[in-house]
Image (cartoon, rainbow, N blue to C red; front, side, top):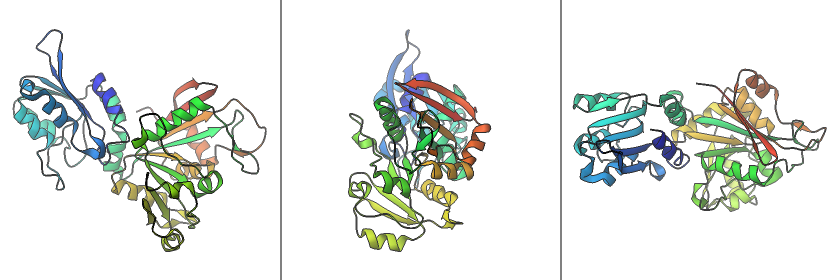
Length: 360
C-alpha cells in the first residue's frame, strides 16, 4: 500500500475531476511477491487506476491481490459508458482487494467494497487509511463540502514581512525554494491569486520544472472590480495555460479583454466589497477542481482564513530582515494559526519551510 500511495501522489494535479488513485496487482502466491500491473488515474480522470493495472496484468490477474488507494467505483458514469472499476475487478478473477480509504462519492459510497464481498472476493479496508484519506482529502471535501482542499502559500522575510512599506515586491526566497513552489503548483488543480498581485508583479504562475511543462494548473484571478488588462503575461499566455477571471463585473472585463483564447470570465457575486469566496470555491468544485493553491498577497490569504477556507498554510521564510513593511500574516490568519498544528518544518537552502494544518 505504501508503494501505491507513493504512485498516487505522482498524479496529484493531473487527475481532476477525479481523485488521483493508484492500483497495484500483485501475485502474493509467489515468493517473493511479483508485481503484475500498476496504474494511476490518467490525466483528466480517465481511465481509472484499477482498469490500467488490471489491463497490464491480463490473465495473470486471476487469483492475485489488488491494492488500491481509494475504494473502487461501483456505478457507471452517465458521461462514460464503460464498466465501473468494481465490474472490471469482478470479471478479472482478482481474489483479494486491499483498500486504503473509503470513497464518499455517489459512484462508490461503500457499494464497491460491498459488491466485491458479495461476489466472494476477500476485501480488507483501511490499510494505511489515514495516509490514504489525506491524499484524497480534496476529492472528499469536494463531495462532502462542495469545495476543494485549499492550501495557502506565503513568503515572508526573517522578520515577518511580505513586501516593503510601499508594497514593492521582494526577492524573499532563494532558487531552491522557488523550485519547490513550482512543485506545489504542479500538485494543484487550480492556483488562485489576486488582481493586486497580477498588476504589481505580472507573474506567470505556471510550472517551469524540467519535464513538467504540461503540469501547470488552471490560473484563477480574483478580480472583484474588473481591473484585469490584456497586456498582462497571464492573458498573453492563456492559450498555453488557461486563465479564469472571477469578477463581479464580467461584462466590463470581457469588453476590455475581447476574445482571448484560453481566457474565461466568470461572474461571481460579491460578499460585502469583495468576491464571495464560498461562491468561488463552489464554482471551482463544480468544474471538478479538488485541490487549490492560493498564491497571493497577504490580503487575499487573510481573506481565505477569515472565511474559514484555509486547510493548510505553507510559510516560506527567507533569511533576510527588512525591519519594516507589509506584514505577511493578517489578523484572521494569525487567529487561524493559534488553532493549527505545525505539521512540518525544514530547511530549503537558506530558507525555512513551515507547514501548518490540522492533524487528522
